[in-house]
Image (cartoon, rainbow, N blue to C red; front, side, top):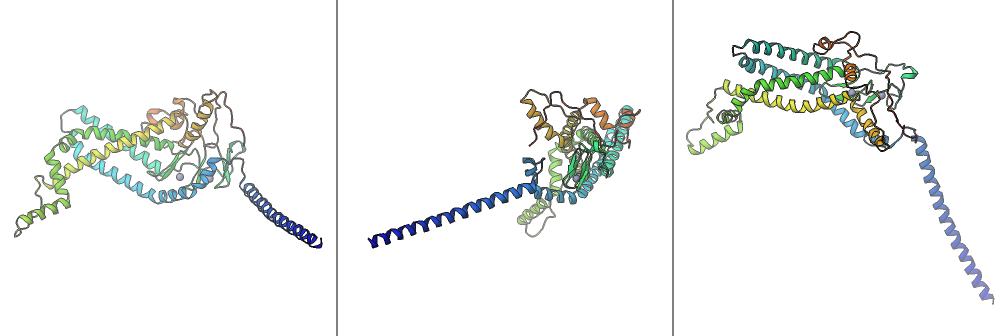
Length: 383
Ligand SMILES: [Zn+2]
Ligand SMILES: [Zn+2]
């Protein structure tokens, strides 16, 4: 009997010890779970912001990549400007030396006057608008912004942002009506230099089209002549010259030939290369710049910037589901949008202030914008 009681007591003790272990394990698990919940709560409380959304999280994750792009653009910017100036200078020189004399060869005075006036009008406009696009600051928000002019707070500058203002990570500044950071002008395109940028693109595109049309007869004559193209290539290729010398030396080891003997003189070969280079470079720019200019012209016509396009597109898609046609709040109609961009107010005219160089500023300081709300617009519900 005593033995039996001893066994039962032992088994009871062992059972309670097992329960204790389980309880302890459960306590540890629940404590760890509590700690995890507490950590998550702390993290969320530290990073909570009513503007937080998945784009904000994406932006934060992409921060190192943006930083890298920013650094590269910052140091590549001046080189890109030098490249644009160099290429434009080469194209202008070839045009003056090779193409214009051929255009003026005929006795047609109307053609001569056209080439001299139209060509120089384009040249002046391209040079002026590029210079102004590079040197004109895009516009920065003032230190003190009136309450009505504040749309949000910049998380980088910790400063109020007027409507349409965005932070440029390359310039590390907030830019009024920011469109984009352009490496070709090493500047941000914003409220004060958007007009110069657009006009530079338009004039440059017309310029490349004009050069392509003027150079086409010469290009056809030079490029589609197989003898000239081959001779010019051979004369210019060090590798082919070396290969030819080597082959010649194998045939007659006692006398080394100097290389391929071109039928073209040095002047003819240089002329050939200049015409081919001129046409190819202008044609490439014509296509690439044409697409870029068309894209920006479409944005201007719709009253939105490159940055606003993305937010407007998502709003457009969201409201389409409830049969509401969304319109950019800054879209005042195609003509009015272009008039605003060109700053044609107070007696300014298209003939004087768009077709000829003009350094007038925009209509207002870029801190206050009259937004138009789309009829039936449904604002997003707050998170
Ligand atoms: Zn900022
Ligand atoms: Zn910038």
